[in-house]
Image (cartoon, rainbow, N blue to C red; front, side, top):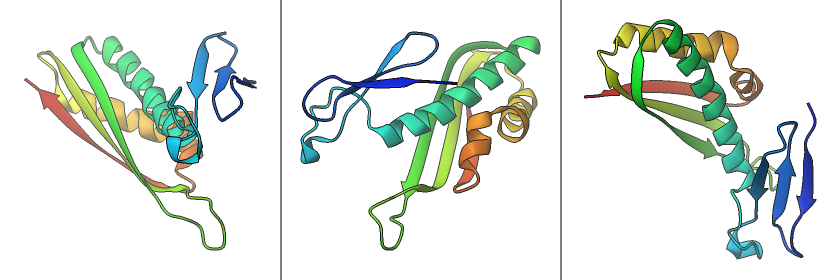
Length: 141
């Protein structure tokens, strides 16, 4: 896997491109001179984790003929500054899976999420070495 980040302005706005050629924009916060022209890099990490698991869960639930009409994941990450540095990695991450659909089977949803988190999602495997990752499910009527 390979990506390229290209600086867009004279501050912190970058445009990233991966193998799909789709552009993603990142930027620094206004407090350091950013322009809010893209997501923050750490937000992008949470988005990567959530989207990785989301793809797994949708694939699994489609195979189980679960009809999803709305699917959202809220990722909440807590960061702690490492002693002697300015680095603040995630230490805990909680994913809330919110699904709405027709006759959804909660046991199938829980199984799909567990399979994603424990077997399929490479982003989970990458991040769980440093952060405790938990999850919950909300089925919306």
